[in-house]
Length: 86
Figure (cartoon, rainbow, N blue to C red):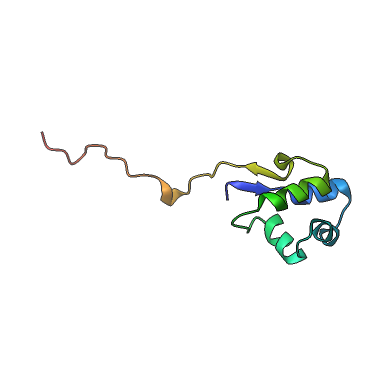
């Protein structure tokens, strides 16, 4: 996934448990686990703002973009002209 979630890093820095963060943000521990494990399809700005407020950080401390590395099967076809006729 091109968006990496670093909630674990901030939890460790703040010496806070997942349960405490979930309680203070107002979401279930299960939903927080989905988010922190990178399985969430989306995050509401209100949730992101609450996470930043509780963890005293910026959104960029929690989320970062990573380029996807192409897989061998993802290489586009390249025509080398071997079968071209003059």
